[in-house]
Amino acid sequence: MLRIRSGRPRRRALAGGLAALALAPLGVLTAAPQAAAVGTSAFKGVNWADPRDNYADDPVVPSGLSTSDGYATVKAKATAILTGFRTNLGANTVRLPVNPYSVGTGWWNAYTGAVDAATGMGFKVVLGYWEGPSHKDGKVDDTSAWKSMWNTVTAKYGNNSLVYFEPMNEPFGYSASAWADTAAGWLGDHPGVPRDRVFVSGTGYNDNVTSVCADSRLDGTYLSLHHYGFWGTHTYDEWVKDLRSRIGGCAGRTVLDEFGAPMTTGLRYDDAAGTDNFVRCLRADTDTVRSLGMGSVYWPGLRSGDTYSMEALHGSGTGLSLTTNNSSGAGRLRHAWALTSAGGANRRWTRG
Image 1 (cartoon, rainbow, N blue to C red):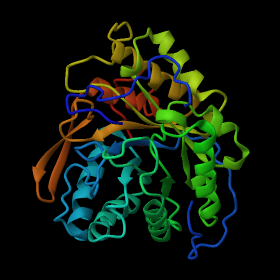
Image 2 (image 1 turned 120 degrees about the vertical axis):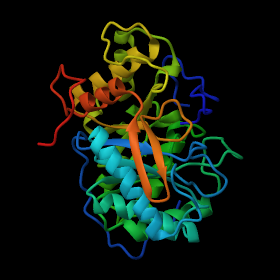
Image 3 (image 1 turned 90 degrees about the horizontal axis):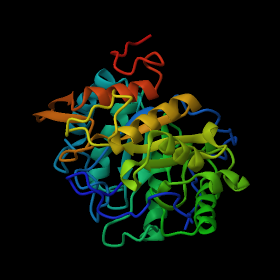
């Protein structure tokens, strides 16, 4: 997702149906059984993002963290933030960015504290690659550096069943066939990573999964899809139709790992009769995800300065806490995740 802090899109013309426009073997892992990704409703998550929006030509640093933090400090901060995601929203999944400037560096040694905190709490972690803004062409910036990054990441977490790998976020610079070739190459070069621990992005801006779903070389993987209200202006029913068209018959493998709307502007997402386009879209997304039994990962759970951020960060040092910016928006997340009754989007979720 690339937006300026006001929450308005910086670039993407995606209204209506957007046409869809290699690595060294990992020696530390043996070839894994190619398990199939079946059903995705277990993913109830949020993105934890860099204030700059994860597109960086330097290390990615999610809100609340600092490159001056050591491992123990990152882990303590992450524990506090993840506790907020769990307590306030009911989340059990967090999606975090990686790039070659972050991995295999001193910051990587500290940043792993966030991953370790999450998995230690039982969270699923999706690690996704973002390109840098100096390129911003929808392609891997430096293939050699990308390969090295993923070798390091999978060597560290390939045997941790709670960690998932998303080779690239929003590969809009590739044709459908070229992107499938790239994703298949990633799988071939990482035979030790089970396929049900890999998220293959949809084509374009992750906006359609039907072609990657149909490619047998990618069988057994999860598919990641994005969907946003600023892509167009539609009625509720039209938004439902639009999302379903992008999923096709692939709901059993698909996670909506980015979707969101303004949470600091007073919109009421519990209003079924609401005429605001963002309200319609978010309600359509959350209803569709629930009805299809899909997992979803909201953008963003936390990103300082972003009007879409579901949570606000408070405190300093390791004494951090989160509060929810929009209770009706949080209610829609709990609804999508089936943490409320079918009609109870505004009830407080409970464990059970």
